[in-house]
Structure formats: C-alpha cells, structure tokens
Image (cartoon, rainbow, N blue to C red; front, side):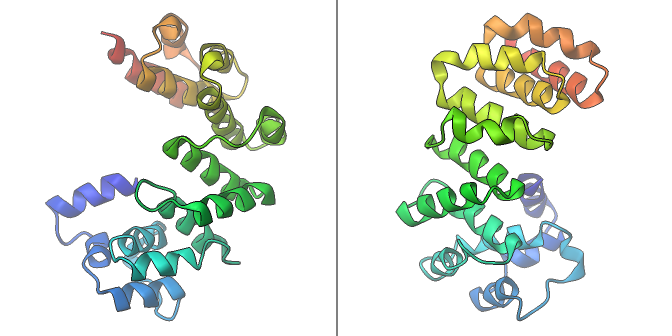
Length: 215
C-alpha cells in the first residue's frame, strides 16, 4: 500500500501523501511528535509515510526516528522499526530494538520485526522462539512466522512451504503461494496451482497470480 501511494505521488502531485514527502523537516518532526495533528486526508498510513519521509533527512530525521525505537506509543515504535530496519539505516541499535520488540510478544510488533528480519536477512529467532506465534490465534502472524522460518532454514524451505500449502490457516496458504512465486520454487508449482480452486478468495487469487512466474 505505501509503495503504491508513493507511485501515485509521482503521477498525481495532489495526492495527500505528497504533502508529507514535500514537507520541511520541522513540519515532519511536528507531525511525528504529535505537536501537530496529521491532516485528516492522510488516512491511516500517514504516520508511516512521515517516518519514511524522515529517513530522507539525514542525520536529523534518522536520529529522531531512532529515539522512537522503544516509544511507548505503539504506532511510532512500529513505524520507526519498519523504516530504520532497512538497507543503509539498520545498525546495532535498530537490531537491538527489533529483538526487544519481538520479545514483547505484541502481535503487531512481532509481525513487523519478522517482516523486516526477512528483508534484511537477519534470522536470530529459533523455531522455539516462533512456536507461540506459529500456533497462536493470529492467522497472519502465524503465516509470517512460517515465511520467516522458510528463509531462516533454506534447506527446509520446500518442506515448510509445502506444509503451509496444506494448512487449515488460509493466510498460511496465501503467503506460501506468494513465496513460491517470488522465489520460483518449481517443486511446489503444481501444489500451488491446485489452490486456484481454494474456497478462500485471497488464496485462490494468490495461486493464480503466482503461476505466471513459471511460464
């Protein structure tokens, strides 16, 4: 969603997020700190977009985001981790904050940490660490834990993703389709293709959209 909105910003300069990306550092900091309310037309991703814009102001913006890595406000903490755990901005302080966030057990933070770990190729958490989330009630978090493990254990990735295709959790099946397509895992093409008839529309769509990667 964020990427799509940024692409819109290039084509349609009046899109609301362009106001964020073109804002001064001072204005970005006031939005980030909450001293100025985010305009209502920024929608729910507004704070994330502010965090992204702050990464473009170095070193001041990066420094301010770093101070929010353990922010009691969950929105700011989550956004700070998301946009600092990337190429060119991740460092030992960010890594430490990711570990602390994971061990809070807060589903939103755990999901973000696992997603960013995959993005930067950092795999410190074991199967035992992931187990509470893999079998928990949050379907998307369980699926994220599965994807993380498939990257953390590359020798087992085919087995992990193959099992996920047969999971009762539809998000497991959906995420597995995306991984199989993105990584072009030919051994699982047929099993994924069978999910075009899945009763969950998102799973069926994921299977259909990833099959062309093998043509």
